[in-house]
Length: 268
Ligand SMILES: NC(=O)c1ccc[n+]([C@@H]2O[C@H](COP(=O)([O-])OP(=O)(O)OC[C@H]3O[C@@H](n4cnc5c(N)ncnc54)[C@H](O)[C@@H]3O)[C@@H](O)[C@H]2O)c1
Image (cartoon, rainbow, N blue to C red):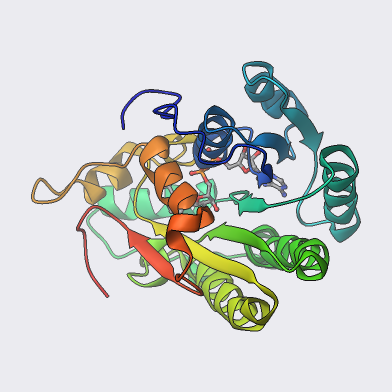
């Protein structure tokens, strides 16, 4: 599929209520558009209220929510609002996440100077905590809130967005790799617990994808990702399609999967 809506008019999510985090940009925005095009009522959350407002404006019946996933009270409030207004919650796609532009800059400088990157020794506690807080704590807050709604209902599907960089770790980017490896293991552990109650949890682990996050990657580092033997940067829609598959009934037997979607860069 290469059109923006990608619906194909299937209505795969007709009558379903979905909450998407990180919906103000990139993969989360593409997921919100795809889910809306396929019939779901969307609750689109992001820390950037203006961005998520702009995304939902184009989507009939979509509701913007300003939510910081590092704050569990805000996450719980967003879920309460979605359930109160939507009457149910069938799908959660958790795409909120952050990179570290400063560490990327240091890696790029090293590449240009033809020397190995030295990041870990220079990494402040605040940089470490910021990435872990959003990418790992945030995933916990969202998974917990989702299970609190879905377990009593005995149904639901949750998709978290991990990263292929948890497997093929980038030198000089340890906090991001650790946050995503943690998010994968967390999602898998929760998946094994939740399936007993009819709730499926799965993860997409994208490789390089053309989003706001990629736009913050310095040119030298981007060039390092160029490999003509494999697919180029994925589009956010290509990753969204995989997330929608995991959220759909077509993936009924997929539980605790971490689907590597990196266009053939490496396998695990
Ligand atoms: N782009 C890539 O190459 C790539 C590769 C692998 C994994 N990922 C992962 O995909 C996910 C989506 O990233 P993207 O590439 O679309 O980036 P993006 O920057 O375009 O979008 C991320 C969104 O998350 C939101 N966000 C950030 N912190 C938040 C918070 N505390 N609470 C709520 N929302 C918050 C941002 O405002 C933004 O709208 C992330 O988890 C990212 O780590 C991206």
